[in-house]
Length: 135
Image (tube, rainbow, N blue to C red; front, side, top):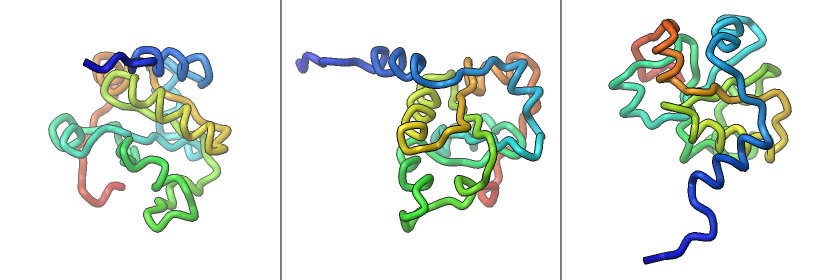
């Protein structure tokens, strides 16, 4: 068995020390504002099965660096907007790592949603069916 130097919990804890985390109540206040873009970093099957936050762009965690980099052939123009990015996943682990990575890449106005999509849904946040053309 491999003895890890750092496990996922260590990485998430380190990410949380280096990024902004917002609670669901604050996210709900930001949702729908013109200068805010929600980014869903979950896998496609999760979006298809559970839905997503309305207006959220989809940027799966495994492709994030490629989608965010304007020099990449996979660049998603959503990342070229001058907006605050609110990243979320199912419960907050992947989105904390994703926010930290984007911060390291140079994105300044970025945060992640504590509790993720599950927290959003539990608090009564609006949920939309994922459409393939929604990003």
